[in-house]
Length: 368
Image (tube, rainbow, N blue to C red; front, top):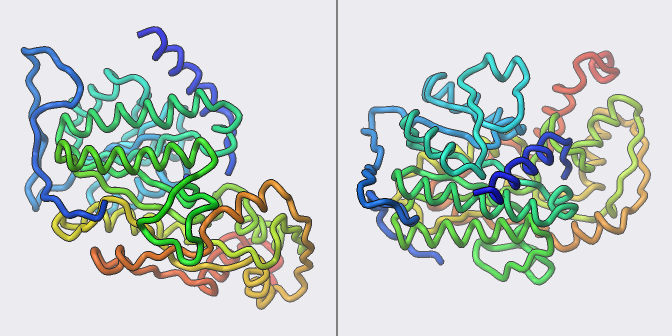
């Protein structure tokens, strides 16, 4: 398959470069012993199952991003170090490589991916591999290959081997015609980026595979995720700039409201939905949320411990247009009702946590 191999090489080049800027019907999950792909008559497949007392064997694709590394750490504490395998096409840093199992995995290489699942007796698959918005818009054909063709490989292998599959979705899966405040789980979705379009595709394909093949597909629409290592949007940059320089220039309007979540809540929500009994899930894709705030509200909270912080606004029309097309607030009542989702971090707790984490050797630490 020379075309697939060529795309795979292109995917390596793109992912090695720095990136920037992630029907309501309950149906009983059934184990299957076939793949939706055509296979030879003498092929023999079986669903890998484990008892309630056993730990799942987890594979995380695209695992070198902040969410993959963080989730691996959480899952290893829960299930044991050797039961969670990180994978990526990039070379891992030493601390990640030595923290637990790591393996090379190219999601565009169906045979390689299938061998990993079989040889390691994988039972859970967390699929984080994707090209994000900026990289995707710069190379739509590559984004289509990684985000859609790669997803199809994942879906087929997960269905073939009876895996529990998690694929994250995003605030970017909604568009300017979606209701914005609040945005429900089920509504019009017409995103205008290839990343958003590919995530809507993933939601619908996962739901289809669940109903058609019994695939145990689970998906969460993440809001903006905040951590010290997040992509440098305003809600992360303000903390770095406040500590380093005491000055911050915001590229969004002061009253631009967006849903946000601290990374620890995001990772815990992912584990919670994966562990939820299938019979409790009334849908396959859920919104999750923790807080919703505007730049001016975040600034006011940061200025409580750092009253000398100087803030100016220099609106970026491109970023502002994107923010104006996204939800202002996620309605996550279904997640809270079905599987008990509850966030730990509100805005004051977020600000305290971020400043304490980043400010250990800074002026804020000295001020305390």
